[in-house]
Image 1 (cartoon, one colour):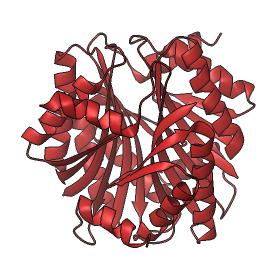
Image 2 (tube, each protein chain N blue to C red):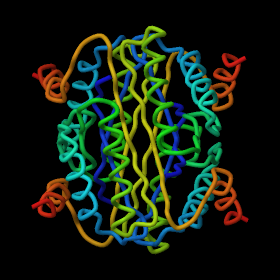
Image 3 (cartoon, rainbow over the protein chains, first blue to last red):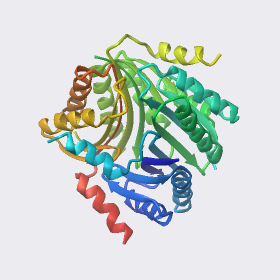
Length: 99
Length: 99
Length: 99
Length: 99
């Protein structure tokens, strides 16, 4: 089952500068072969359900290894059976209605 | 890795009455042996990472089988390595600070 | 416009024990006269749109005053025009389908 | 108080094609003078707290006027007092750590 997801990961107990941790997660997602796109409040992810969620799990593991005693994530995940759709399709579909 | 999570699942394309679908998901989570607590905007879930996320996947699968062409979920998930904590611990910890 | 909402507030840069901050937010919501119900990953809130969001804003302000340099919240918010519904109605509606 | 936010809005009871509704919200945010950036699972928003949340409220109102009996949104919102930061700063800060 293919998903389009969006991940915001927040390590706790490591101060206020989180970009080093977010970057580490980005690498985990990329190494998992997932299509991703970083934005200002998270990362869009496209891939198979199992691949996406095992990468997010590795991301939590890694942040704990990097010293974060707590990690709190927010994940949006969408699946559809009516048709195949990419991340670019979703954005384009909105943009064409804004003309 | 143990998690405390919170799931809001929204089937799309099936009208505005979603409780039948949410109830079906609740059963999936219960059958997976997970500890859950329903609230007005989702469900708290406590369990091992893999058990929690494979149950959420089954929930998406089931809602598609029930006729929903799209399913969009929001998942909050927290992990911690500093100490063991239950859902009840989290609530109690806040309540004791409110006295 | 009436809303049912769900708030998870995370202060950053103040360590891993967040319950003191969550409790402070609970008091803000209660003092605003909103109906609330704490759960293990947030707080259900019922009230008028403006009252709910001005209380959430005061919550961010207060956490900054308490010393948190960053505050990150996740808010789910639902509105409906087809009928009036309380937080208890939503839970009961799911529970009756689980029998 | 300045915020960086992220909004995902889901109208219910209007079928599975939501892009028309998302596009209408984008226009509301733009007309409010807010800085926005659409992505595959929502929209980044930068602006003052009150301007951002009154635009999100207008978005719910508009979707109801367009025929959606229910609207459910997920909003992430971050505030910080330690320094000023734009949406571009946040993305760049992560990207520089990925080299």
